[in-house]
Image (cartoon, rainbow, N blue to C red; front, side, top):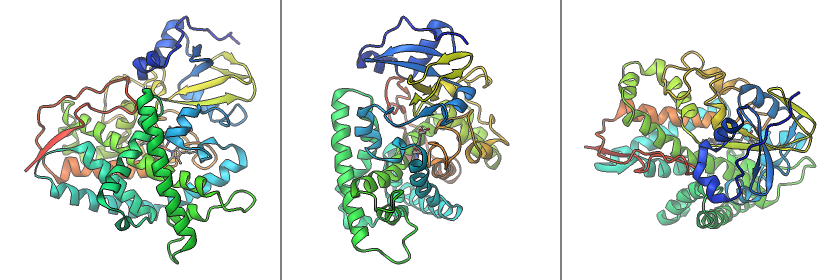
Length: 419
Ligand code: HEM
C-alpha cells in the first residue's frame, strides 16, 4: 500500500478555507496528483477521500466511526447536540428507526399532497415580481410543521417567519464568518426552545390518533434502556426533520437556476416531463453544491484507492467531489437532465455510493440521510408547479452561485414574475 501524500497547501485559517469553498478539497487532490490526500486543516490533520469506492469504505462501521468526529461549531449550529448524527452502533440503529418509520409510503403521499396544495395557494397569491427562495422557505416551513403534527395557529405570523428563516441560518452558521456563526447559535437556541415547548406540550397532552406523527413520535421516543429521551434531545430530533426540509429552499432556488438561467432545460422538461422529472431532480442534486463533506474517525487501518489510512485518522468524505468524480461519472461538469433516466429510483431507494448528495449506504443501518424521500417529493412538487402548472417571466437578475458560501444559491434568490 502506498503512503499518504501530504499537501504543501496548509489551510490554517477559516477565511482561507471559506474562500476556497467547495473547490478546496479538489484543489488539494490536484496539488498532490492523488485520489487520497492528507492535509493540515486548522489545527488538525485530515485525510480527504472521495468517490464511489471510498464512500463504500467510509460507511462500513468496521472502518470508521462518527462519535467525536463532528467539529463542535457544526454541532452548535447545524445539527444540535445529542442527535442521531452523532451516534454509532445499536444506539444509532434504535434512534434512526424512529426517523425511517415516519417515512412510510402513505405518509410520503400525504406530505406530497399537503405541499402541493400549499405551493399552489402561495403561487396563486403572487401577482408581479416575487422571490422564489422566500416563497419556498415559507411554504416548506409551514408544510413540514403541519406534517409533523404541529399546530401553527398558536403562533403569530412574525414568529413563524423568523422560525422559517432560522432553519436556514442554522446551516449558514456552521462554517462561515464568526458573525454568521453567532447568529447560527442564537437562531438554533431560539428554535430548540420552540421545539422543546412543543415536545413538553405533546408529552403532557398526547392526542389519540396522532402517535404516528413526528412531534408525538419524538415526544415519546425512548433510548435503548426504555427511558424517554431528554426533552432537549427530542427537540433536536424534531428539528432534524424540520430544519433540513426547510433547507430544501436552497435546492428549489437551484432548481430555479437550472430551469430559468440554463439554456434549453426548461423546454426539454416541458416537452417530456413525465419521463424526465425524476432524472432532472437527481441531476440537480448531483450537479449543484450543497452538503460539502462528512467527517469520521478511522477505527482500524483502512485502505482506500491503494493508500493506507492509519487507525485513529480523522477522515473526510468529499461529497461534492464524489458527485463530480471523472473516474465514474461522464462529463460531470455538464448538467444533463437525461443522465439518470431509468436509474432515478434506484439512486434514492437502494443502497447507494455513487451519487451521494445526501450521503450513501443503507438508510436504517447507516448514517444516510433520513430525508431523501421527502426531498424527492418536495422537488417533484416544485418542478411540477414551475414547469407545468404556472407561467412566469424571468426578470433581469444576478444568477451567480458563489462557491464560497454555505449553503449556496443564486445571488438574487431567483426572481420570477407572475401575472
Ligand atoms: C436539503 C437537502 C438535504 C441534504 C443536502 C441532506 C444531506 C444530508 C447528509 C449529507 C447527511 C449525512 C449523511 C451521513 O452522515 O452519512 C444527512 C443526514 C441526515 N439527514 Fe439529510 N439532507 C437533506 C434533507 C433532509 C431532510 C428533508 C430530512 C428530514 C426530513 C433530513 C434528515 C436527515 C437526518 C435525520 C440525518 C441523520 C441521519 C443519520 O445520522 O443516521 N435531511 N443529510
